[in-house]
Amino acid sequence: MTLLETIDNDNSTFLADFGVTVTYKPDVGESSDITAIFEKAGEVVYSQTGETLSYPPFVIVREEDIPDADYSDDVWVDDGTIGGTTYHVRGIEKDDTGMVKLILSED
Image 1 (cartoon, rainbow, N blue to C red):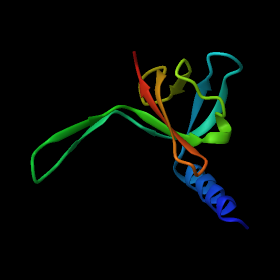
Image 2: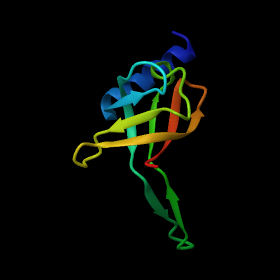
Image 3: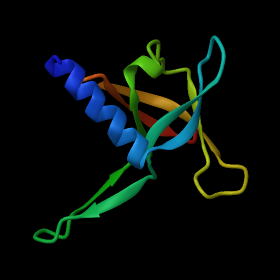
């Protein structure tokens, strides 16, 4: 097994163990349900300085599940609100191991 195959296997296991199903809605083409790690918007407070860093919601997905990701795409997440939330893709960060972080926004 090659290193990239091992990484892909590890990524698949990670998503299977910790992922949730989200609906990826490309601007062009069919919607599809994929497994993703979803993180709501939040804040980190640095204990030494008291400084606060805010971060937007994001999902981490396998690149092969969204090979043509674009800034005009949407992601629907059952985030605990009634009816879930549709987020818009505002950033795309590939990590060169087959995973992609999509930075999301509600507006």
